Length: 82
Image (cartoon, rainbow, N blue to C red; front, side, top):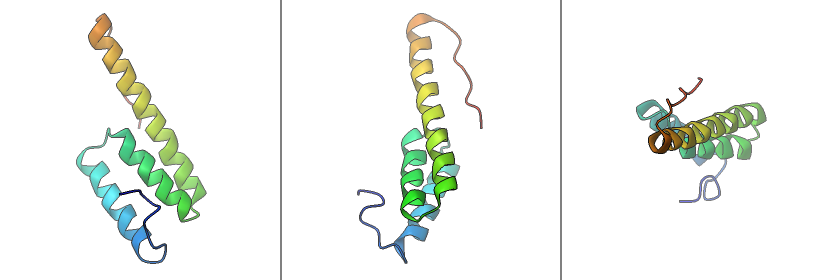
């Protein structure tokens, strides 16, 4: 599903936000979920929340990249900053 493109703003955006927040609660370090939540907030006009979630998605993506480099190089991974 293309979030939030296929959502009806008045009804489905709040449901999308709830579902994405639940996904983050269950497994927090998923950059794509934070990014989709950022897109949904942006579509709802909640710019500040969208920017915060977009930044978090970028942090998680960088951490994932660093973790992969660690596995290859043997360096210690950086911990994500909440």
